[in-house]
Image 1 (cartoon, rainbow, N blue to C red):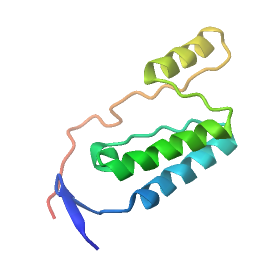
Image 2 (image 1 turned 90 degrees about the horizontal axis):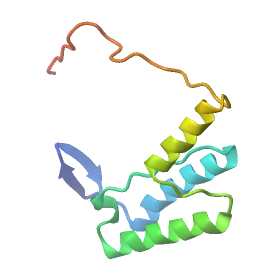
Image 3 (image 1 turned 180 degrees about the vertical axis):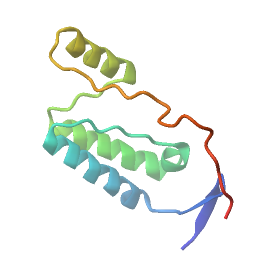
Amino acid sequence: MPCISDINFMMPIMSPATAVAGFREDFDAAWEEGGLWLAVWHPFVTGRRARIRAVDGLIRYMMDKGDVWFATMEQIAEHVQSKVDTGAVSLAVDDIPYYSDKVKFERY
C-alpha cells in the first residue's frame, strides 16, 4: 500500500470514501448519544477535489440527519460558559502539567 511521509509519520493514502466513512461512523455514534463530534480536516484529507467532494457529502448527510448544531469553537465555549454561569453544569478542572519534574525522553 502506498504511503506518504509527513513529519516522519507514515500513513496509507486512502480513498476519499474510506476516509469519510470513518468520520461518518464517529459522527453517527456522537449523534446517537447526543454528544459532541469535532472534526479536524487537514489539507492532506481535504486538499483534493475528490476528497472535498466526499467531505461535502458528509456535511450534507449530517444536515439531513437533523438536530445538528454546526458551531465554531468560540460558539461552543460561549455555550458551555453560559451553562456554567447559570449553574446548569459544573466543570471538572485538571491542574496541568500532571508532573512536577522535567519529562525525560529515551531514544530507542
